[in-house]
Amino acid sequence: MHYIDLGIFVGYMLVMLGVGYYFMHQNKNQDDYYVGGRNIGSWHIGLSVVATDVGGGFSVGLGGLGFVMGLSGSWMLFTGLLGAWLAAVFLIPRVKQDQAFGGFYTFPQIINFLFDKKAGLVAAAICLIGYLGFTSSQLLAGAKLAAGTFEVLSITQALWIMGAIAVVYTVLGGLKAVIYTDTVQWIILMLGFIFIGLPVAYYHVGGWEVIRQTLPPEFFTLTNLTWQDFANWGITILPIWFIGMTLYQRIFASRDTASAKKAWFIAGLFEWPIMAFMGVSLGLLSRVAFEQGLLIFDVENLDPEMGLPVLLRTILPSGILGLMMSAYFSAVLSTADSCLMAASGNLSTDIFGGWLNRKSEKIQIRYSQLFTLILGAIALFVALQMTNVLDLMLYSYAFMVSGLLIPVLFGLFSSKKDPYAALTAMLSGGAVTAGLGILDIGLPFGLDPNFFGVFTSLAMYLLVYYGRKSIHSK
Image 1 (spheres, rainbow, N blue to C red):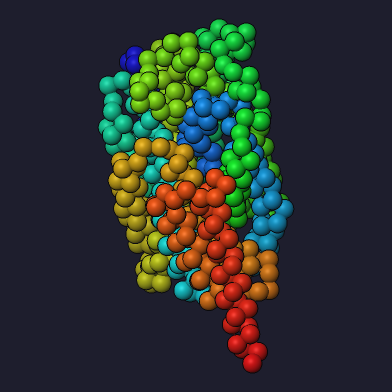
Image 2: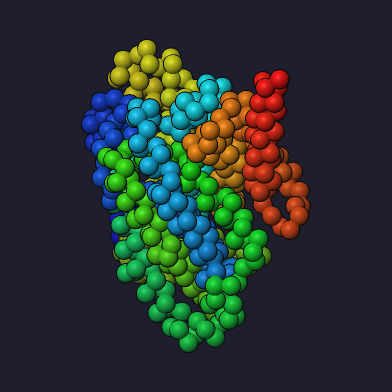
């Protein structure tokens, strides 16, 4: 990489750290640190939501899907569009118009309110574990981009660099730094895709006729997937819009119901079709370049997620490569910081909240920053043990969905509320998904372990609810 590219990249990272330092002096209390003062507009929220949900992991993951299956990989983010719009119609009005939720910072506080303290603590533990895994996936995504672009860097070295930058500016700035940098980061990524990555890659591989002749026809259709692919993406990604801690933080941070709903509609459209097709198209173009022998690639240990960064390193001239890499690292940081904030919020509010509430606001913020730093270090350690970005992301999503989806749906939209049923559903659903995933058992019809986790959670909720109701009626 040319020193111009390195200078652009280093300058961008210093700006991110500067933003964190600026907002460190703007944060007066936990309202500022965790929910941005509850007065942020719809466009900032919307772009932050899509930057957080898609981010670097899905950017790299979409590139990998485009490399393997072509345009059909875009269906993965169609489930994000559905989830965002369903949440805008049903979830946001329920949460924003309930005055009881007006002072909350986290998702487990809602579970605590709807059921009891034990259920809230279990929800906090599930969120904490899930978002630590998700933060790790983003750091790994950034490391893959860096290692694929800077030939002198190994993935391990890149992980240490990415981890340090992401953790430090998140620790300093809190949610305000996260949301406002997310807006800038997402704009940079979109401009990088539209004006640099796609046109240069398209020209480099030889244009449409060459692309069409190089790859099989199924790469250019939307049917090159199985129903199990779509079902597994749906059961894992769509429900996260109803249980995602990062999303609840942004609902709480929105000015009112109308601005929050507008933000979610904006986020859905950016997810699909805009980001979905741009991501898989770049992956498809990297596959064309690979088939043409234009990429220097380890064929024996082929990692589809590395195709995109290697393509960009190969085709982009000095200066432009630095801009494009800054765009991709923007996406990585925009998700890593949000997930880290979510995990920190679980620890400081849901687990140690009773103790911290007895401290001054300044001390509360300092402890929140300490928790963010500790969790960031743990996420970095987890990332060092993993190899696949998309698998780690979807596994983290699945664990949270299987444990939390059924209790929150019953709690928010049903009169059938029971703390014992909620507790049983969370523990059983999360345990089934985690157990099946760790044991790597072949499941019927090629379905994801999350299907069985959600089904178990639902069955246990109803069994305990009606069993207790039957006992009390005697």
